[in-house]
Image 1 (tube, one colour):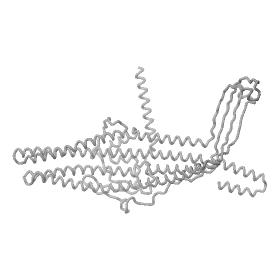
Image 2 (cartoon, helix red, strand yellow; image 1 turned 90 degrees about the horizontal axis):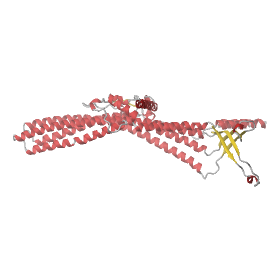
Image 3 (spheres, helix red, strand yellow; image 1 turned 120 degrees about the vertical axis):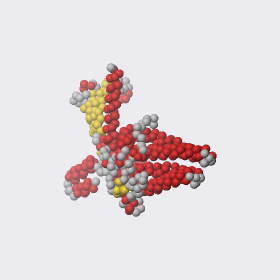
Image 4 (cartoon, rainbow, N blue to C red; image 1 turned 180 degrees about the horizontal axis):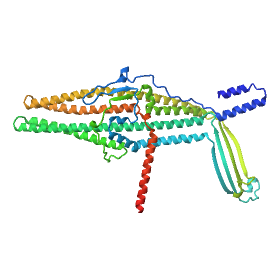
Length: 531
């Protein structure tokens, strides 16, 4: 626009009126066909001005403590995340389960369909940049009355009329409204793309954490069963001592009570395990009645010892939820340009060319041609303030999207900070639980020996058994938390989607394979039914 204005100003120095007129017309035509784009040109927001996730620089170089139940983990700041981060747990069963979930999970397929819708809408919107061409053929039979011409007594015979024509309509995108709309639709498609990435990241994380939960529950069930076995043997021993007069009836009842209390903790664990299996089955796109072949134990999972940690400046570029909010901010920015352009004149060119005749065979004979060419200028004059308020609403929507973007960024940094803290403190907690479990075992063995020689009563032995049972279960849960914290870190950092093939292309390829397989099965069934 500035170049055009400068060109108009330079032509004002031309003395001849004809040349000035020609220059003005050329400038106007150039402006109409090139146009400008109103509204702000979108730029990605700057990353937060911080180099750390936790207070104090050493927090980015956390090195957790080791324990008998788990090795130490070291954070590598700036190290990139691999696309298939779940393979770091070194469980082929887990990898196969995530691949199955990627192919069959309905939530992921729904997100893929939403992406397709957004991409097709964006492609459809691009057609607005081109002229619309329509062809029509209108045969009709009609009759006029002489009364229409002021001669009631005159009869006009009925006749046929055939019209064939081509209509062309083109809206000049002078102010960039169409291009801003295309920009908005493309931003919506980008939003759906990162929604798909976020859905897969959530799915993979849920599969991993559910598998870890299953492994934890299996370990707790095994520990409980071992304790039940030991307490059953202890009950038999107390009964023998009671028969020999070395124990009282109260000792037998106390041991029986302890055993039954331990047994009562087993059904809730088995219930949780069954529900966890159901959830894992549904995540893979199968009904809960399906029996999964994969079964997970903590001993089959490897705890990654070197954990990548993205730089804070890169986190906003890697988190799917942040990128999705950035796309919504982009769409809101484009809508400002659309609302602004709607307040300015709209230029449309219309053309119509065809032929008309009373017989089909005479449609293209000389003299049957009809045509028209014209333009339309529409300038909004009074809409009761509608257009002004729509532009203000677009500005407010942009401010809303910007605030939501900042909130999402802060939430992303909080997720990483929470996970780093969990990695550090849960490792320390597991080490303390290992120490407590060993101390409880030593105490139980010592108390059992003292009880057998009559040095202590039965009550200290009962207390030692309960303490050992509780510490075994707590130790197993603490061990599983370290695996879950590791998976949460990969999720908080974005999951490494930038280091693998485009997810939508992969899913579409898998869908095509399934459709081809279904067609093959259909053909096989058809041939079987025929022969």
